[in-house]
Amino acid sequence: MQWTFPTTVLLLLLLTQRIQANFMLQRLSNLLAQNTVERAALCPPLFSEVRGRCYHYGSFLASWFRAAEYCHSMGEHVSLACVDDSVENWAIKRWLLFNGDHKTGAWIGGSDNGHHGIWAWFPTGQQVRFADWGPSQPTGGDQHCMYIVGGMLGYQWADLHCDFEMNFICEYRANQVTPWWR
Ligand SMILES: [Ca+2]
Image (cartoon, rainbow, N blue to C red; front, side):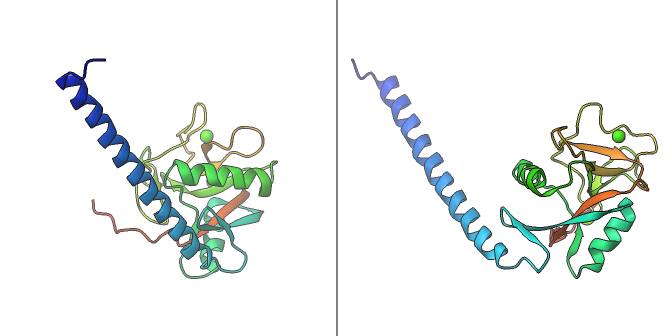
């Protein structure tokens, strides 16, 4: 094979990108490992460590607001769970599959109360960026509270009337984020 100039440049470019990607992956996995160790040690009693975060499964039925109040009563920095990204979403789904009640859903911290159609995480005020709405969800209308659908429906998200009573998920330190600005 003739090593023409463009071929050599292309090969060098590919090689550089591969080295960079490997380096970034290594750094990311180091960071995740560090984070997991640090946070795991910080889970308070009654909370389960799930991929470096701490959750409590509220196994009695409550409205969304009552569930939020119960989470707050568990201590400082505890609120309804906020699902920040697909990694956390998958971790929670898997955890629910083994630890949740399949006959009911689980409230989480998303709501469009008072700003209909704009979903935000109530514990943090951050708008919902990553989302995992189930088919035809959110319904809208007078359904303003977010939950993870239970059973065999894939644990995707849906909205429902906030006064419906179901199980819920509290998260420790869900609200430790950068303050948002309008
Ligand atoms: Ca709905």
